[in-house]
Length: 204
Image (cartoon, rainbow, N blue to C red; front, side, top):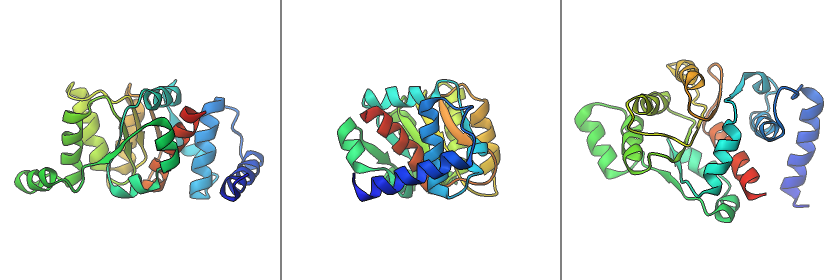
């Protein structure tokens, strides 16, 4: 076994002995264990929120070749390339796109908000991974309510103290297939981890 995979496997064994995963399905358990492993925080198992059938929806979307849209480049950097190649999935981020930069200045919106608008117009049924910007998640959900986007899945785990918890609560109440978490914790590594878990399942 690859040394990195051995470390992850050993970590998963430890995690399974530390926390109760009985409320999660087999596929959901992989996502939760990966999140606990990434954060080093057993509490993440209690904070994680997964919509009914959400993980399966995400897996099926990736199997169908839906692209993954990330709010920031840190999320794209954390997604495992070998699984992307195996599944034939493209990862995109528009935070630094010239049109996004221009529109953000003209409209006084955050780049993250404009990037979601740009992505929604081009890839309305993509898989979305948001780990940094609560404004991106809030805008994406607003676009969903307006019928301008219909995400196949959202990994929404932005971190922070301003609108992060609120944006995730809104996602948890939505009908979009999702994985999110309660509270201020989260971040780009968490969003990437959820996508990596889905890709692992899709590649099996």
